[in-house]
Image (cartoon, rainbow, N blue to C red; front, side, top):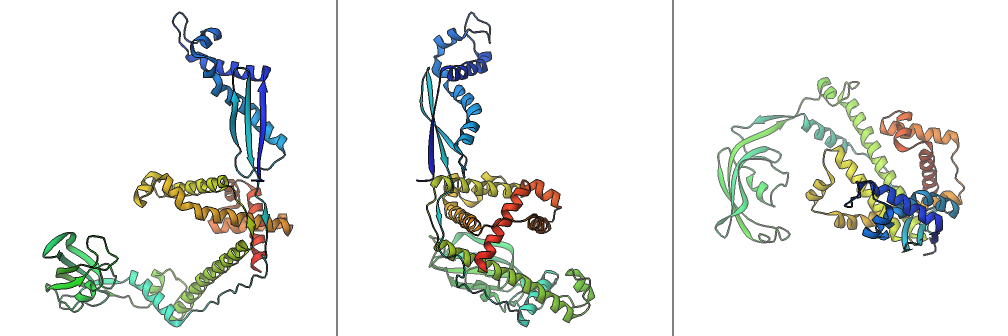
Length: 413
C-alpha cells in the first residue's frame, strides 16, 4: 500500500561489534563454565561454547535502543501506529533491519456538507409523563399481601412449579418458593397469563407449548406445568405528596403539576440528546459512504487492541478481570478480536473522516476554544480542569478533541 514505507538500515563494523560486546557484557554475569568463576568467563571461551548467534537477540535490542528514535526522526514521516521492525539478515559481521512505517491512509472526501439528513423532532406526551411517574413510583411502592385476593397482572407472587414433557419431569423445569412478577414475561408465553385469577394455595395444570426458538431439546414440544400459588402480593403506590416528591429527589416541587413539569423537562432533555446523537450518526454514516479510503489491516488491529484495553479497564473498575469477562460472554481473545473488527473499522474511518475535514476546512482551535472545551469536558466528567488535563494527557489532547468536535459541526450543519 502507498502509505507503507520500508527503511532498510545496515549496521556493520564498530557499531555492530559494540552492540555484540554490550550483549555479552549484559549476560556474562550469569555465565558459568567449569574452571572459571561465575561472571568471569572470557568472551572467546563463551563464544567457543555457545556461539556468537546466542548474542544476536540482545545485540539487536542494543541497536534498536540507540537507533530506533534516530531512524524515525530522519524519516520525516508521521506514523499512525507504532512502526515495526523486521530482521532481514544477521551474522557476525552485519545486521540488516527493515523499519516498517505506516503513515495515514490517503483519504478522498466525497460530499460531507448539506447531506440531506433531517433531524427528528422531540415531542413528549402527557401519557409518557404519567408512565414515567408511575415507573418511578413503583420503585417506592410497598408490597402488601393479598390474603383473600386473586392473582392479577403486575402482582408479585410466590409459586411452586414442576414441568413435564411426555409425562416426565425435565431438567431445570421445577422450583419451590419462586418469586415472580406477573406480566414480566419471565416464562414462556401462556404461563403467566394462565396464573391470572388463581387464588392463594390454589393448584393448577398449565398445558402449554414451548416456542420454536427455544432450546434445541424442548422447542415446539408440549409441556404441562403443575403450579401452586403460595403467596400473592400487590404494589401499593405512595401518595403524590411533598414526601413522595422529596423521595424522588425533587425538594423544590410542591404539587403534582410541578412534578409533571419537571419530569417532562427531563424526558425532553433525554429525547433531545437521543435525537441529536441519531442525527450526528446518520450524517457521519452518509459522509463515510461518500468517502474513499483503503485502511491497512495493521491499523484496524491496533484499534481492536485499544478497544480490548478499554473493555479491560471498564471490567477492572467493576472488580472483574478480562479473563472472567470472556468466560461470562463465552469468548476468547481471538473471537473477541473478531467481534470487534467491524466497530474498530468504523471508529478508524470516522477518525480519518474528521481529520480530513479538519484539514480541508483549516480548523485550528483558538486558545479560548480549547479553554471552553476543557471546561465542558471537565464538567461532563465531574472533575476539575487540572484533573482532566492530567488524566487525558494534556492540552494537546483537548485541542485535538476540539478540532474533531468542530469537524462534526461542519458535517452536521
